[in-house]
Amino acid sequence: MEPRRPTAAATARKRASEKAADGSETKAERPAPDRVHVSDAAVATIVGLAAHEVPGVVGMAPASLGEGLRRVLGLQQVDEGVEVSRDGEGATVEVHLHVVVAYGVNIPAVAESVRERVQYAASTFAGVDAARIVVHVAGVSRA
Image: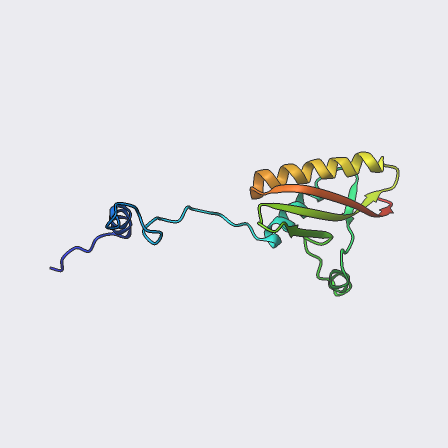
């Protein structure tokens, strides 16, 4: 019968409890805090889905030439029309949305609803702070 090996958690606890000769912990011995990173692509998908839920939004407009080519080729994605960029530290994101609204709706009211829905979805579902949300109304369409 083989001797039992200590578990990874027990080894980590032992290392964390060990001190340097002067009584202070060394940097290598301190456990790193847990951190969750949500990618920009995931944030763009969440934001795109949230924008589609707003009444008065017919669809999204391509935000770049690459997205325009994907649309021509029939490869639409839920993050189409969404641009996400992070600040220097990565703590907050800036979101630009390119939407197409239905004819006859109050465009400022729909844009404000999109902004509020995106703010809520980014903070609730992705756990990121959307410091700036810009809604570009790229067109009006008959729904």
